[in-house]
Image 1 (cartoon, helix red, strand yellow):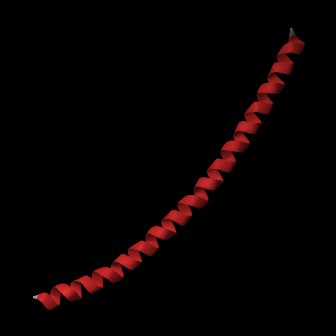
Image 2: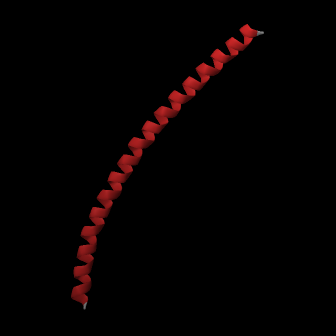
Image 3: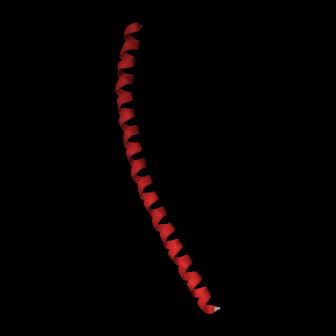
Length: 63
């Protein structure tokens, strides 16, 4: 029985390495997507600010 447990652990260690690799790949993908979303948020904030400023100017002209 002890031999089966050792063999099982050896297989689990290989699966663990594969799992760790998959996790690292997921974390790298998450980081890439996170940076892209942050860049888009900054761009949207800039556009919103510009449009708000233009609206204020237009509102002042109407009055």
